[in-house]
Image (cartoon, rainbow, N blue to C red; front, side):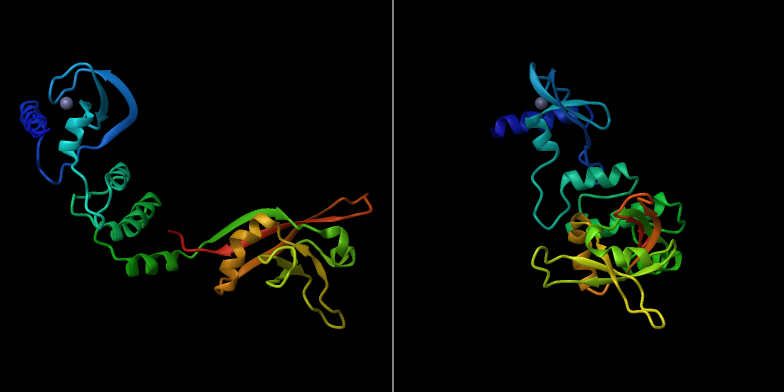
Length: 238
Ligand SMILES: [Zn+2]
């Protein structure tokens, strides 16, 4: 095995592989091809293609990319960050990967002055300044039971969002009510869908504000009317 390793290192030097720690051989494709290894010259071998176009066998790849300690970013993460145009080195820490992903996203949005050294705190500040909402459309579930509430809904109305952790059917339940008006009590209209509830219940429980607006009433000629909604979440831009 040691001999194979020596041979691979020698061969990889012969074909010009560099041991510069900043140049991490990135794998272009995981699709296995067969043929001659560009590093050790053995044939046939199952090959992986490096970003620079060379095909190497698994033994040579292990020499070029030796196992990584747990506290460092994995090769997969390094490859991902490099694809996103970031300068990463073999010393990049695993704990730093989420921050670097944010840097890449911020750059993707065309924000200037953001680089590999930008801290999470600075990213938060820039993101908060940009503000921004995350919005999507959905429809209220369970409306057939709450038609008197539905009747009060008008387009543009902001509904009251209420968590129901003690709901026997779904502990993530998020109920929607009409707002309280002068001489008019609040009436339930229904619930957010179970799929949305799974996502948003923990967020609401942590204090995140979710806004829900009536975007459209449906079923004009039917006995049971429905309500389409716009869900808006304040979310950092990156
Ligand atoms: Zn090889």
